[in-house]
Length: 447
Image (tube, rainbow, N blue to C red; front, top):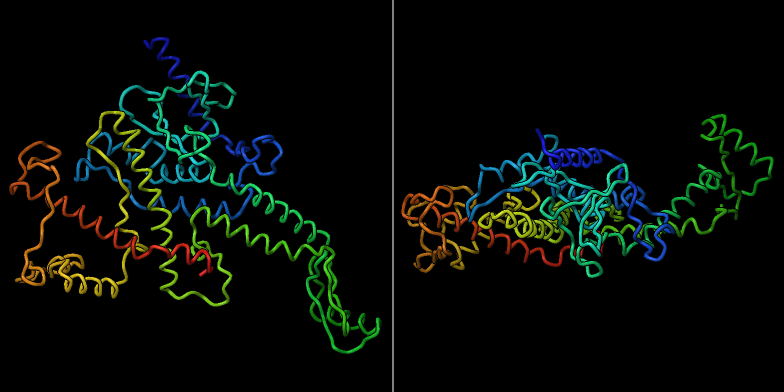
């Protein structure tokens, strides 16, 4: 039989799990600290299209690469930790967990992984709404509020909390859109005004202009003949016939200014989320960008926006999750090797490899391995006849990092693993240096 504590734990677990499918649009009222209820914006993703687009782009892309587990320099493909990240719970894949975590990160500046309320190493992970989590300062305890309004105490070992560093609150994240509260309010008001103008038929569907002087009777005749030939417009709107020297003036002179305001706010929102205009299909250029320019904007999205987020999350998972459960030799990282946007164009890659060989940075066989060509005889010597410098073992022993048994070929396998990590880091540094400044350039020029 279950003890009283066990019965309570099961009840708490059911209570928390029952909220996961509940409506989560309440909250996000921290724009106005003095009077949170004064803001019209309660959920930026629901009420602003560019916030919605930005959050979706980031979540969709961050969930593409696999989150891999490593023990030392070796990828771990079995064990409890690997299984946990492959299938966080019965109803969620790893990609879905990253997708949902990314959305909360971009809306609230933080996300929570709950371990199901069970003791010991986690067997499952659920993504909780940050809006239901509360830290009580005087008691220094966390609480989760369920649908019935019950505040359930949450011990620190029951969840993992990842949040963007916040200078105003050291234990909670800050919503990214908090600084753009006024811009969101403006967009909301502009959209309401445009709807009013359209409903009042302030803008006709078409205008017939002529350089001739016509009488009112002639104008009526032109309009009648137009309707007979092409039919009446939708919504019973009439065609305006304007004679010489006549122009249409909207009832609300500010309507045209609203377009400029909306474009400025769009740029501010996309910039805050690190989304280049081309990636969001928000460029205002009359001519299409070249393929190379488009590729550079997509690479800038990854280099300047997504990869830094990946690295931050991986570090937080290592520090606050893995180390907490004694997994000090383990780490996680996102594998971006299959992301097409990060791959060099073939011509650029071949040119770079030739330059690296000529500069003595790579041997011919090292370059051939990168482009999946077979090694050639006498191809293991750097230009000038020097043997390539091998990286140090960095403390990796000749024992297998998983089994503890002596490694085959005298530690060559451990060194090979480190060499792969070294090459990957060196390639990433080259890419980051090459893309430095592209993001700011394209954000400012719109392509």
